[in-house]
Picture 1 (cartoon, one colour):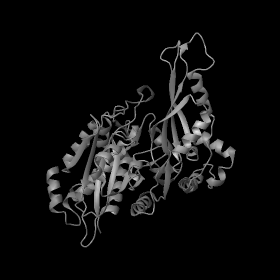
Picture 2 (tube, helix red, strand yellow):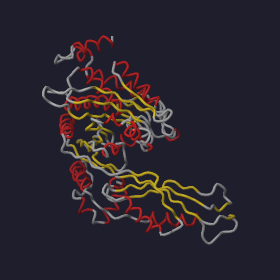
Picture 3 (cartoon, one colour):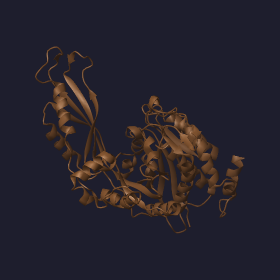
Picture 4 (cartoon, helix red, strand yellow):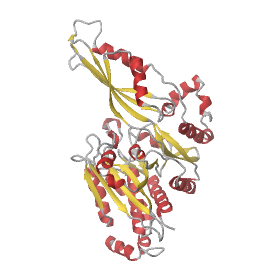
Length: 467
């Protein structure tokens, strides 16, 4: 039956309303998304080690069922990536518009079962939710993209641009086996791409109102390893100074340093856009963030109650890893710590490193860069951003607010190529619903997913269907 529908879709592609869309409406695609997400969540793609090829196999089976060709490649054994394309066409006397990529990552972060109230890879559908690690980050988004993509392909509409569905590996560890690898080894895939829709933004519920956040830039990760050296010895004979005491002293200096507050333009725009919603929901908010940051009491209160928002106002470093002696009675010659530093998008990383060296003030502590990205901001005066705003108003009666992300996504790879990339999700989360991302008991509401498929389809139709 499914094959017959696809054949009819091809035969009737020129009609305004095809027999295929009559046979399977967007409601059908929305309803099918529940079972598909449940099945996707049951597939173990926890990174490390990733094993994203398992997810590629599953997504490929759904594309096969729909009769849509796709390609896949492994960047390393088990590290699979997949893409499929709906081709657009040029109007008579006109040019085809730059392609749109729908991006999500297949890998998910680990989950500690003893802190969850259900099996993290259960995929259970109960009480109006789909449960499992990755339900929000980002398998739920991936299924919403897939179902909207399949509905667009079945519609037979003529498109003004190619639409590419892209599922990648390794985002949770930096994307070097996924989006980064594809850009380096498959550059032809992105030769005609002008836009990317990725994770990083979503609707947020404030009381009885919704604001739609679209991520346009993010703090820049700078991951560092600090290695301290000293004379080794026996633990029974304490020395005046060792590699351990040097490192502890250096880390104490870093932990006690508060880097200067700087309100960059995208952050100011974000705070000012959110303020009316926060005030309406009864939150204490100062709309003018540039003035508010001059009040130390306000900054302290914000750090306690909204650490994510506070982190957007300055550079930050978190001490996350420590490694010393493997034996309790051995004073080691070398120890190290790792820092997760996040810089404001306009910060020069080399200048920041020199500042960190000054703070540590110890020639026996070396600083090595583990990972660092370049900053970039996507413009909002684009046809795609206008479509996102139109759809937000249509479905939520909501305003779109450009935002800055404290974490990083694969969007930076594409921004480095000059490709406009937005963090956009068709879901609208109340605060507690979003708590499971990288936390415990991650889940996505069934109605969120159903509605999300329809919203994503509306975005695709408005942006890609030729008038």
